[in-house]
Image (cartoon, rainbow, N blue to C red; front, side, top):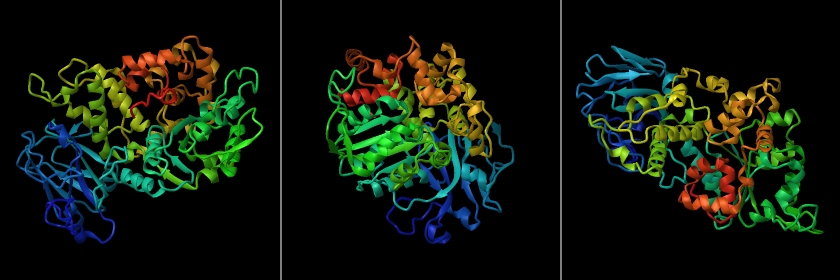
Length: 540
């Protein structure tokens, strides 16, 4: 009986059960399919619980059976590139695994090198996840993870089946029906905005508006008007009434993105509104009730900011009533195959080449390159899911009209970065990564005056107009990149776009926000906000 059935023993293919191993939460070595000639098999898994009790298991064309996370059906790899003569997997002292290819005729490649004889993987290798390329056509991840007892029926809009993403979904369900603030933490690109929307959709305010404000982009001088609204004629230039973000989110959810970058004066305004439940429209003589649920997100170390005086402790305490941590992509490596497939489908459909994933080159090879997938999965991804999506976009455009997936120079440079056994340390020191930017002393940052317009353009294009990523690449603050864009006649923000320009582009791109970003050359987050304000309801 395969994993995922209703049998409480949850029997594995090798005859052992999770009850053989331990009671309560169980960890086991697992094989996850990250690439297969049949792309529908990406994401299937085989639990090798037998290794936990010191027994050997085999990997061949005919075993073990792999099971989709949401279905009880199971089947072996069943591809001619994998020999029927098995690869043997044996436990090592300390929790490692030996991969022996002595008997098998299947070629096995690990980190670009063909395995000769045997490959010893340590417990740390299994925690990180080791990528194995079989026969040049199948990519497997061998890793040790906690085995999930019950498959989830609802993904809440979050792709993945790793333990980390399962935990996020459980935490979202636990806080969704509360009306208290939730602080979403995690590195840049981990999907904090998607988690915020999932909380909104799973809660009692789901029928109300979901309003996003990037606090790093709110000027302190206009913060009160932007957040709480302004009466017509309240000050010079206030030629019309403006409702403000809090009023726009009435009855729904207000998502305060980049809360760690909020100017001190704006922090005071937010704290007062959250504590009192009231706000005053600029120019009005009365206060009104604030009927919103507050969600906030940051990639900053707020406790460190409290210590250095740049963030108010009372605001942190108010926001952190409930917290959810979004795991970085390197901690959910087994999800990369699923994410990659989903992004590829979207990008290929956008250019009219959705058939590529099921087509074959003249020599019979699939369009999806298993060797390239292996290199992608083994990367560190300091920009996380957002960076992966951007890379997929580059790969698809660079492979347009080709019978085989190819990569350009920018992606090749990324793939050639050396991997490290200490992934978190390397990610923290990677140039341009959010971790590096967060840990750099202020003296190492550049002045906006040092940045040429050509450098700015290169950074914006490389990041697909993600202003946070571009600022990190240029080693300047986020506020500085807004200053540079404002000074330049070449660039603009989504706020500079006319309604006619947005609606015309929306029609031309069929509502595809990614294509609109490329055409309009503005931040995706800001563009989505403008689209919501215009009632165009962009796809997420």
